[in-house]
Image (cartoon, rainbow, N blue to C red):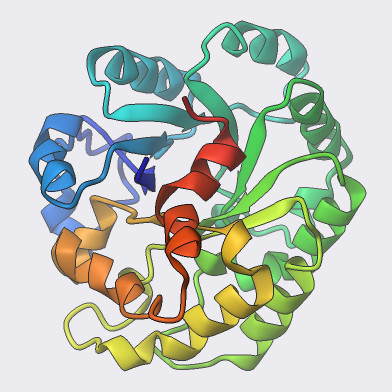
Amino acid sequence: MRIDAHQHFWLFDPLKDAWITEEMKDLKRNFLPNDISLIMKTNQIDGVIAVQADQSLRENGFLLELAQAYALIKGIVGWVDLRSKDLEEQLDHYAQFPKIKGFRHLVEAETDPDFLMNAEFLQGISALSKRNFTYDLLIKPIHYQSTLACVKANPSQRFMLDHMAKPPIKTQEFDDWAVFIAALSTFPNVYCKISGLGTEADWKQWKLEHFTSYIAHAIHSFGPERIVFGSDWPVCLLAGTYEENLSIVESHLMDFSAEEKKGFWGLNAVAFYGLK
């Protein structure tokens, strides 16, 4: 099974989707599975993980409805407020739905560098672990240290690092990001999505060599068994077509064995998210 482990779907609303700036105006429309189903078939992608783009419980219901209508969606990474007083009840409710595999919070939008070490948040992570839900990490550099501390404090929780922690490809800065990736990869319960890289580069001027050192470091750090492919569609379209974004990753897998390629393109995501 070949899996795109990171896609978003939405019915565009200018209030709900205020994060879509004028610079990103091409995203100011609806994006649904039927908009990409032919592209998936052409590229032999068998299924996708639908990841929340809105921090609301309504988003979970929307993605569940899509998953019921479209077999392409194999799993959902939704949203809950891990600090909520009724979190346990919410998680018990979502545990009824096999397509919901885990949750994510837009930590990158949080100005508190220690957000991930908030006591209530950590209790929420423990609640996820008890129910075998995954947690996707979407962070900025200010969260590096608290991410390491959070992961260290929760060895039984499965974490997925989204977008390789968004390396500063456009400026070609490397060292601080690389130190963080090396440190995070020492925790065996953390996987890494090689995803969304085109939009971290110059959207119109990027070249394949701009990504080489970053992807090579992520592969070296996490190993072929703990990395997965994700496109970040439709956001990735800001930096090129689906196929052009695919080429960013494909060009860096030349040394992979056939089995390692199967893992990267799908089986690692199947294992991490428990897909069927």
